[in-house]
Image 1 (cartoon, rainbow, N blue to C red):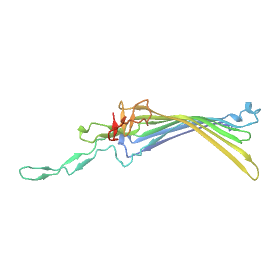
Image 2: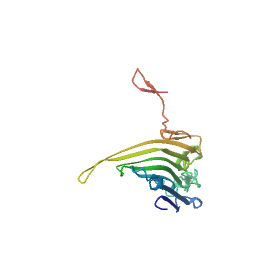
Image 3: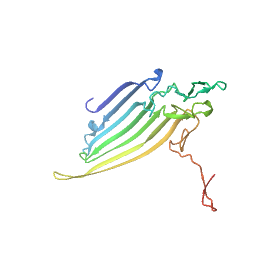
Image 4: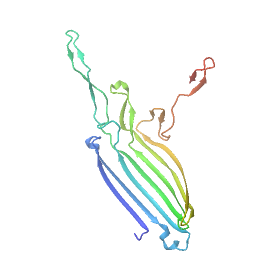
Amino acid sequence: YDDKYFIEVSGRQDKSSRFDRVERTGDFYSVGASWVISRENFMSSLDFVSNLKLRASYGEVGNDDIPGQYFPYLSLFGTGWSDVNPETGEQYPGIVLDNDTDPGLTWETTAKKNIGLDFGFFNNRLTGSVEYYNNKSIDLFADKEVASSLGAGSSILTNIGSIKNYGWEFTLNGTIVRNDNFSWSSGLNFSMDKNEIVSLSVPRQIQGTKLWVPGNSLFDFYLQESAGVDPADGAQMWY
């Protein structure tokens, strides 16, 4: 409105055969707004300000990409597990459950929030932005550990929890020299990023060399502690 106030809203609905019929539909939306402050009348006396814009947005996007699995909600059976009659030697074909599944597996959703300030000074010879962002992954795909005694593997693919990545980003660009024959520009960017596990469906989860615990980082290592080197033979020792 009036080249100063902007708002945009969008929505979409996706369906994926990688989920059970009940969980197949995902609804996602986004909204964004901005205010060009530099076009307000009270900014007219500040000649050195070429552009000043405040903006904010929120948006969601769904993810159904599960590598190597097209129907991960369906249990699979393996053949070849034959039984033999000890008296006659006759074989009876058999099958066994290869893996257990979560029929409630659903979309992994990434929700992105950000608020930023764009600026330009001295006829836009000096431009930049300051932005705070918070990206949250909800219903994260991961293998949840289960007891091997259940007879269907040691893990099950499910929506295990949520994580967030958040921080600040700073950008500064300047045109040092600009004339009809030559232009020299330089840019600088800086960011402060953090990662945090927000929630899990289990108290803790060992994921390779990492230990996932709510409140910790996704990349906290969980490794055996070294006890040094055995002076007798030089072998590594562990606690």
